[in-house]
Length: 107
Image (cartoon, rainbow, N blue to C red):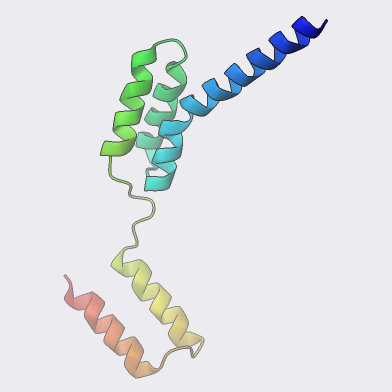
């Protein structure tokens, strides 16, 4: 009976380590802000790594190479944030105009 429990614990630990290794490319992609079809491709390739090991390496490489677009803050986002701060009276009109002119002059 003790051997069965020991074998079960070993199989459980191997399964947990296996799932953790498969999720590494997905975690990297999430941390880098990769979204959309690129994120889906990384998830699918990582899961296919169960059957075809090479796809896991492809997913790992893509999660490092592809540029994350989800976490990039655009000038429009910054301008909306400054507008909210101005409406909430957190910044003065002069500060808002300064931020606005700086963001609009970047283009």
